[in-house]
Length: 388
Image: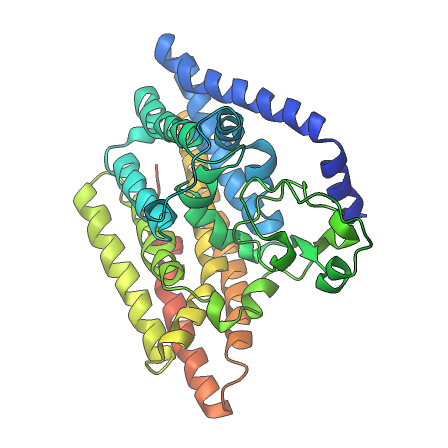
């Protein structure tokens, strides 16, 4: 049973730590080796592992099973937590907890990486990816007492992962009745590395799926759920403006622009603003100007946008294969078409569910507007220039 897997994660944190440090060593080797040993074969291998396998694989895993990568494998999280246990242990100040930070940092890094082709060179990868690791270690040295303050408040990819993981089939389910009815003496508090209030946990948004809460008070368990069900059941206070901006202008606009128009920073910015604004305006029109409904419908775009991001990352893998003589151009239309159809079906279903409380005629109008918002995203994924 899947619950047993969650309980094993809790019981065998010693094995998890060994695995985490093995990943840290591999990660450090892949970052540094092409720089200190600048041979074409080494650089190509690290590019394939980092951007051809790791990045699309992590994106796909977020949408399928949640943020297990973050809680079990991520090297930045491992070293940040390790240093935090030995650091100053300061409390995260108010400015650090600004909700827009991950989105702003991710947008800046993506512009830097795609606009200057940083991910296509060993030094560029070291500066962008390694620079974030150094920043995470610095945050751990100053803030938190054995906690992942960097991951909770500043990690740039957390802005993306928190959106994608809402679609996942797995989550740590909390039974509040069992929690409150736990016999005395109650166990010691959960060692949650992200400082989450586990008792009130209802979302995969921040949960790193590390398993340290599994079985607590016999009220927390790893469980299956219908893909996208978290988006369907979001309450009004869970709908946030920074998520809406992130979906339209970063997950859709900037991601697609960086994937397909990466040769020019000007083109990236132009496509980002044009595509993001088009989608945002179409959502507002679909919601008849009602801000909350427009933002809620934005979450329905996540499956199509997330699959588009994963396909774009996979295209980088195809470009590397094409350089080795593989006929990647023949595979690309089939790959894009399959992803677009799956994304349209998934997002379309979410749009239908998210408008269920509207009167019939208004609902049909909202669905038509939502379909119009899906159209430019699907067209960009399907027909935009390839990476090779």
